[in-house]
Image (cartoon, rainbow, N blue to C red; front, side):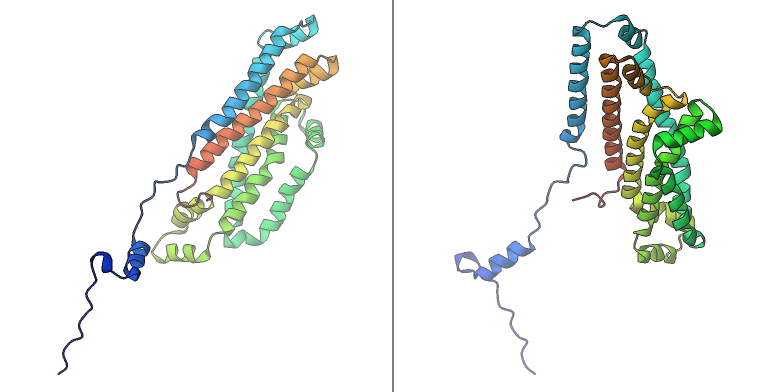
Length: 279
């Protein structure tokens, strides 16, 4: 019976061959610090820019002489009221967009309603393809003047990004993952809530973020439907040819859009599951 083969001993010290050094380096585990999801630049940059713009605007307004028309437009809490109206219009319309677009988008990815997805998406696309001011004018003829008319127009105009991104996010999931979840005994609702939706979160949140910014811009047109908002200051400044009123309305609209987009980006980072962030 032959003797067992001897395993060559690993050389020690300076005479160890270079290949052992290479093997050790290739198999060594170097721990890395976890990547921070929200950096200080993301937290500070946008608020700093907004603060500088607002401070410069306030300094300019307080340094010039306003006539009685401009002063009436900017005094008595009118600016705060119009800003609050725009925030309220944006919040309510976005709530209805989510309430409509998310369930419809989920339903369109189920087997029974898959064939209806192109028709529903095309219908939503018509709402956004129509000019916002024209859509609002049609709704005023149909529903009359009031905040509800403006909110309805904003919902119709902003539903497409959330709807299309929900459908695209759920369809992009590997079918093998869904089948594996069903194979271990998950129900359809459990698979949707614990597998599909978490994987689709980045695309869905991107659609929500787009809808929010769209609603901030569309809220300025609510003034033509009796909805109020910062659009009142902008149209008043144009009609009366008062540049300070126009600038205040425009600057507040831009800064409101920046702040809402910044907040949405933070929520997007926080809610995106680890491992799905962009490298």
